[in-house]
Length: 219
Image 1 (cartoon, one colour):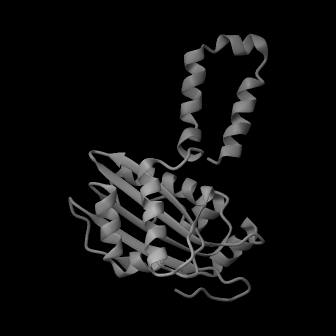
Image 2: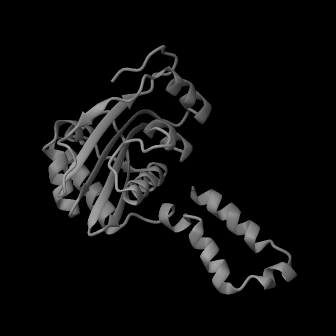
């Protein structure tokens, strides 16, 4: 849920009639705010998320590529996906019943002509980033000259980290309807997968273009 949506719900709670408002104890109100995932999606980057963001831009600087800008909408999509992977103990770009990468990024408010994703589960951030940089598909996403924006989600679970990096070529003039029309023209996303998931580190990467006005999508 985006920050504006959270604020709208909070406003509705605050606008309850005084008599009804008094029936809700403070503890209940606190729980309601935690049920809505405002703090998860509206928060600033965590230490692990900041590490991945800084590491990606350090790798790009070493290749004389422009830095990526933090994108809150992509971060919302990434955090939600990381949370679902942690809850289901699964590593996938699209979990059962979940929208595709392009769809969930658009629903979070991102505007883009190209999007990519790195996902992984591992013991700590450094090992995940190192693994990504030694994997052709993940490295290609981090060093893609077309990408301009990055949002990251990291969830700790059972002593490990579920990490998601969502990259995009950000644009300002494509609304959700236009992006959905492009999505309908796309075949299923294809990607690069590393070794099968193990107990130490597993990861997967994908990239797709959205081509306005075109009859196909290239990968």
